[in-house]
Image 1: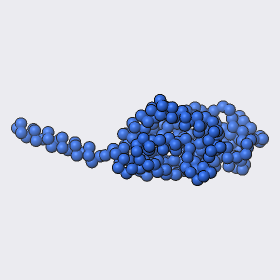
Image 2 (image 1 turned 180 degrees about the vertical axis):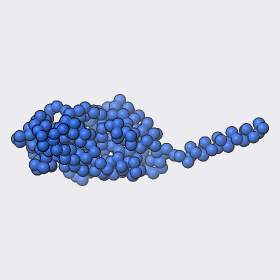
Image 3 (image 1 turned 30 degrees about the vertical axis):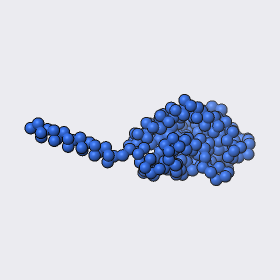
Image 4 (image 1 turned 135 degrees about the vertical axis):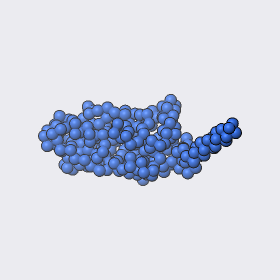
Length: 264
């Protein structure tokens, strides 16, 4: 009887060991592959963009490059429209998602978010010199509000402007600026960092950006829920990058100033 119990226990240990070996962690897979696959927004400065020299860059892009360097692997950026970022992650095309995404409860039903790397909020912008020159003006019944499909700003615009016509655009933030500038929309709603960064592509004074925010929200990166080892590692990376000043240096250059514009 004792021998039978010992044999059963030994077989159990072998089964557990085999299960562990069969289920390699995401970090192991990334190391063996030698590549970190990162989903980014095609054009969403200052977080992700292709600059004047044709180089993929931005705040989130540089943070992902730092992650890959710490892992000892190369980085491969995969470009998607805003509404394609989470599907790309869930399909396994990407290991992680970096950008200016708000970790809402609805999104967290699908993907796991890191701790916030910064806080921001949605803002209203209009074409300078027009009758829609402030947030209150955009509450006019029938006002056309441009938002990004699936973005936090879409939900916030519906709540803030219940009598307006919400026009949802599939793609990146520059589409909203184009819509307002071309008269297809009267007002736009998007993340303040995105609006500030992307409006720099237009002549100075093209847009009026409201001083007040519609909301304040965190921004975070995302992984699949079956990548808990990667999530723990990314949170540790953000802790260390905060302590050694690399995160502050990144945000001060890309988000808290327009210093990057002369270089990119």
